[in-house]
Image (cartoon, rainbow, N blue to C red; front, side):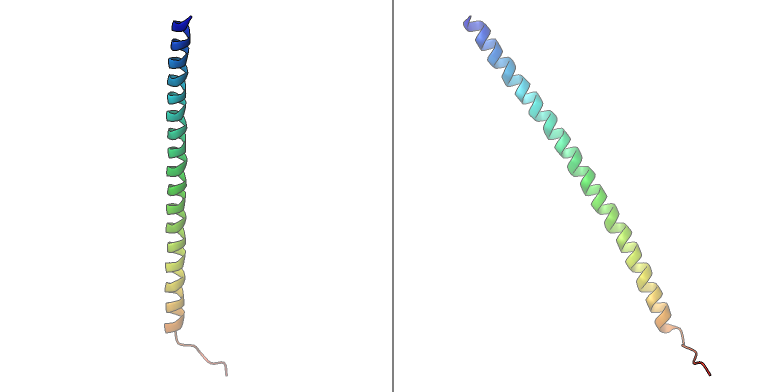
Length: 68
């Protein structure tokens, strides 16, 4: 009976260890996916900002015609 309890304890410990590894891998995948999304959003917003700044600069340098 003692062997059965010892084996069960070892099996439970192994199961918990495996489960923690799987949870860690899932958490890491979620972290990486979120970081990729943030980088993509930042790059998109940067492109929009640069385009707006270029348009504003072009509009500023363009001479304004006065209505007669």
